[in-house]
Amino acid sequence: MFGGLRTVILAIAMLMLGIPAYGEEFSKEQMKGLDEQVQDIKADVLGIAAQLTRLEEKLLYPSDTQVAVFLSLADGEEFRLDAVEIQLGGKPVADHLYSFKELEALQKGGRQRLYTGNITTGDHELQVTLSGKSGGSDFLRTEHFTVSKGVGPKIVEVTLAEKSLGFKDW
Image (cartoon, rainbow, N blue to C red; front, side, top):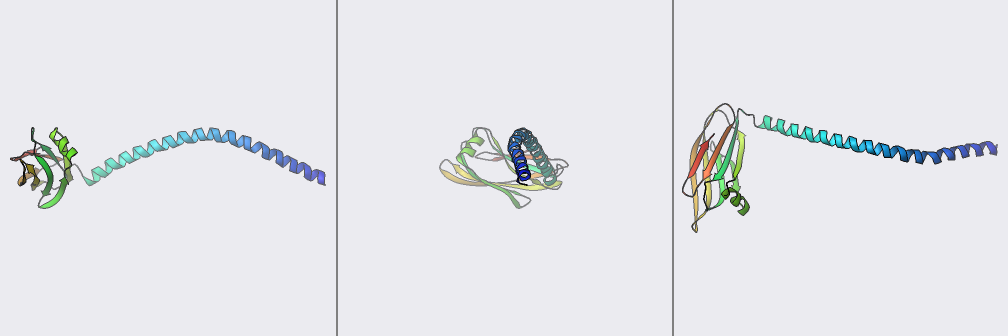
């Protein structure tokens, strides 16, 4: 009786000793496969995220109603721009306080997108208020422009100069 029990226990022990070796070999191969699967899934997720971003942009800003307002400084302008506020149709849509780095980028010819949104076709009033410092004195200037929105996306650029504001309707 003990002999049969001993044989069964011995057989179970031998099987148990064989399992870890088989498990280690299997897990190494499985790890390589899992790593490749993780990389594939990661690439798929990044692709889906990019597609969702494009879809979200199309849904939030359809091209037939989209308007974008950019800001730039006129060539050679050295005044210090502190802040800009934009109103479209009498409603505030964007404002920005400038750091030294941002002002330096604008002075080197950079353009800043201040606003992207939706408007209906037709004429809309664009009010730009800027504040800054020139020649040791503070200044505050407000200008009004008319944005004529047709079918399709609209791009507007406001060019800031110490004495005046320029408006380019693309």
